[in-house]
Image 1: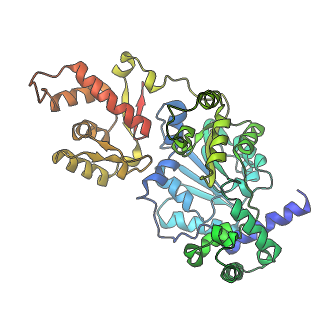
Image 2: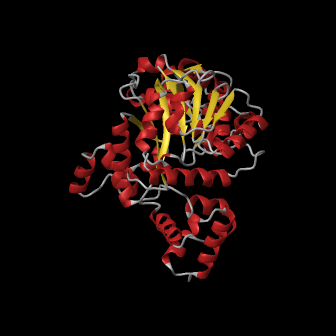
Image 3: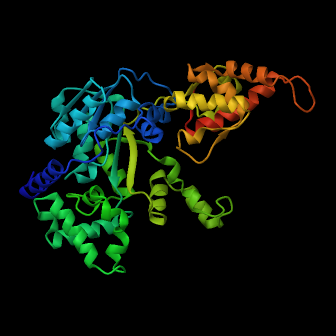
Length: 437
């Protein structure tokens, strides 16, 4: 590492030693944040990659760049029984992380003040590696990805992300401004923040850098000034940059973490009625090009957030949409564990009892609003205890709806089967239900 790179690394270390991130209060818990727990549950990307529900009680998880430990706490809450190992270059952050996990009663944890490039020294391999908000700070992110790959088990998964150069261009300009006027070389974080606030206050409202990066939120939230206007080593990337880094690291993309929000066709008024030349062109684009075109047209994502793993490790499976009747007959139905809470079950029973639709998206907002018919909800109720065979759910539906309410004729098993199948396909594609052949 050359002297310039070493100097930048030391600045980053000092920044997080003097201002550990995030500054989430020690007592704050993520238990009620279903979306966060869903993203950090190892089961989520594993199922998306393999259409299998893995055993998760004894898995090992590395939080690479754990900061003050709030993400480590999320990982521990989302993956009960897992071993959590956290590393960070900031000794002060590691101290806070240890205190946080101890405060919340997690014992199968350990933390080390080392860099991501040094994780091989731990002599451990991991099922899941979380590297959140770190790669864009590394001098060489490919080296970071390669280091994580070297300790990743064959079927393991890495979650990592890059800052988007297109979405955050105004913040990169702001960082250049504060470097030029010497604000980012001040030893005290409080003084740096104060000088940013004074500078923004002195600028006219219509000045672009103020209009694009400032507002009442930043005036009162010092942590976000620290993480945007003053972030040492911050760099931006595009989709091609990100794919190039994966290729150089010999890693394979599993899926974007928020994949539903990267649908290129959602950007068009009438996606099924595009001009012929455009429809043909879009249909021939690779996944990388589709994602890149999305970010060029609509750069709304601050993070290029993704799951990846060793190449050629995806288990063979048939997509649910292509299942044959025989596949459905022996299908096993699982509820996503982030829905298995007493509060959700209580609301489910209330809706069943009162014959009201169950708003499942209220408790796990990973997609748009989604309502479940009260009869289907009643069929799903046993999933809160354990997985069920498709045949069991079909029989339950037949019991609840034995006759047609209009003709009073007996419902057939085939009719019940088709209704249940249709409901499960929708719930599985939205991420609430997991299906195994």
